[in-house]
Length: 307
Ligand code: ING
Image (tube, rainbow, N blue to C red):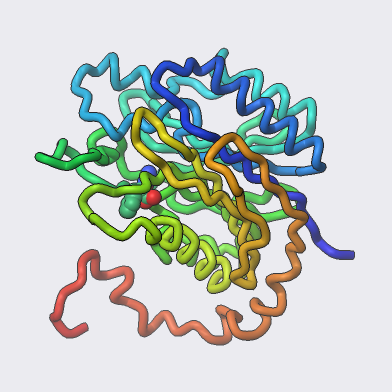
């Protein structure tokens, strides 16, 4: 009997500063309903799905900053999404700004049967802690979020082992390898990626390529499926890439979004497709040699001193 899981990714178009939580949750509920109507068992929403990508601005008024965070989950505004998930029996990944006491995290949760069954807090926090002079676009996640303190856990969600990461995490191979070493079947990731990351001044074709590159490589190298959900389109005047996709353990894109708006993509994933790779070329137990990998754990930055 094949182990399959019907997976959906719910890409959202832009969320502007004036969009209320209520309006956004209504959009997410429509996307969840669409995914359920296609037979999906799980739906992946983007990073910081409930608000506009506020780390593009430098804000020092604590009340203004806190207005982008959720002090409780579910909150009265997000409860309808939890209830719909329970009623439709469709689980979801949701990215949001988490206020945990006085601590601020860029977080994601797994919700199934209307209950939170897993949480992750973003570990690779990109950008800067202070606004940079003459940057066309700021990226101040280090100003607003602490480094996550939950590691990269993998959760047993019945038919599959599911792990999570968030946006910049997807560019770092360590993210997936830690989950691959926990036999993850599916990695769910949401992202908000500006088209022009100002300080790089790179050709326009590269952001899309550099989005897919780590997803394809990491799905293949860690014998897992990856479901990646963008918040896309022009948010507060800043273009964000779309390109939401579901990637197979073969390294192939199984399905991808065509628009930069609210869009559902879905795919019936054969979870045993990974077996061939796990038993052969990526049989970690047979082929990995951790005794030669110590630099990966012992060093943070690169340096020329001999190991
Ligand atoms: N966004 C971006 C990302 O990693 C970024 C930050 C953009 C880094 C472009 C490098 C290049 O996709 C978030 N939210 O991490």
